Image (tube, rainbow, N blue to C red; front, side, top):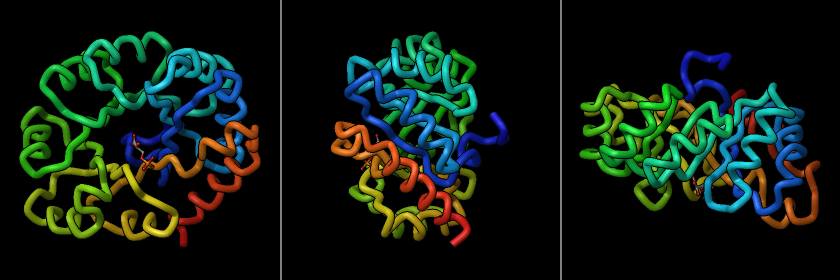
Length: 208
Ligand code: 3PG
């Protein structure tokens, strides 16, 4: 990983739900071409682990990770497929233990202050805030920055290009995650050009 922290690799982490294995490599290449060298493949489809494997083999310049780690055994499966980071929507003790045991960087998911404090107590300062919009969005994260300054977040869930910049301006946000870069209809149509354009726009958010 080029950055010290998973939250500092890209401003927007592309969260990808892949239906067709053959989209894996072109999508990864489109993201890299657009300036976003990271991808979170969600373990929500049958092809996800193979997609991680293929991207790890064929697009080594992208940091490929696994998202939607919802069972402890997912952590090892993802690591064995070549995932270089892990993301979970939650943070149960078993999930934390399984993700930590892989030795990979990972983001456990939190939505409440007590969950954030539990993750901090377990020794981890970086986490996903999920589902970001439904759980309180920008005002919520701004409210907890002062009482819980040690936690840094990747908010994900319901974020759009219109709301992205407000999240990125928060002191406790390192990056955000979203699926808008790889919409299902564009992937079904093989429109990788759209993925590249959206990646480019996402990179511009940071400097804008
Ligand atoms: C996730 O897994 O992080 C979310 O499903 C992504 O949320 P979005 O689809 O609302 O961007």
